[in-house]
Image 1 (cartoon, rainbow, N blue to C red):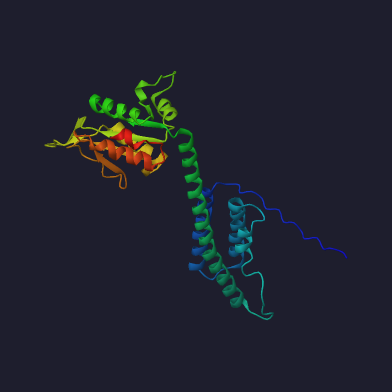
Image 2: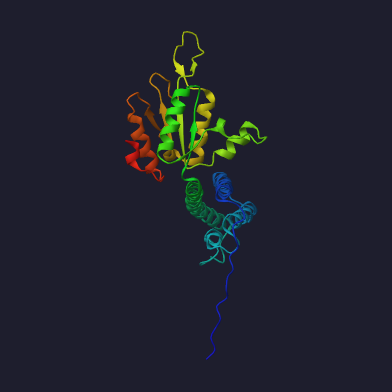
Length: 274
């Protein structure tokens, strides 16, 4: 008995990261919609669109990927009318293009999911590696800085205060990037500056503190950043979803901060927070 061998189809690797694949496919969807909105759809225009679309799909998913054929095989099979006129073929091209665009939107969602999983994996790996390191962002309030730093050390976490780290011939930005590989960030929002507008007396946080708050939100994710603020300070309005904890004189903030660090996956003994 002769066994028929199944032809093995090799699938190539994607040539671009998910975010670039999303960008390429979005561009082709926009071009496809323009073709549909400016009918009649000529054979030359449709063939050109398909050629570039195949190229982009193969870059995003790899040569031989079923995701490529799921788009490019649309309209290629089925019954055809042998004596059909130009309008029949134009309608068929348009119908195929509509189906292709619909399916491409689904592939974009697939890439978005892959992108989210990749980003979560990167963040998770960073946290696993730097889990006990906590970066403390501060302004000019020395008392708040030392009080917060000593509490974080009490929780057996390695505290990173940028000015206490050696420069090593690096610029301030290079130094910041090197030491920002941490598992959690605590940002002190203290009233260090005054409003600069006429008759404005609001206490403001230093701009470098606001910048570093945004940096860590982007790098670690919102659930790994906690902002401790002092009464009377103007809170930034652009950072929705971030936990702002009042650093009160009674010290209730300590338990809140410890809870957030523990929820973020850091090894925290809550008995030490009391």
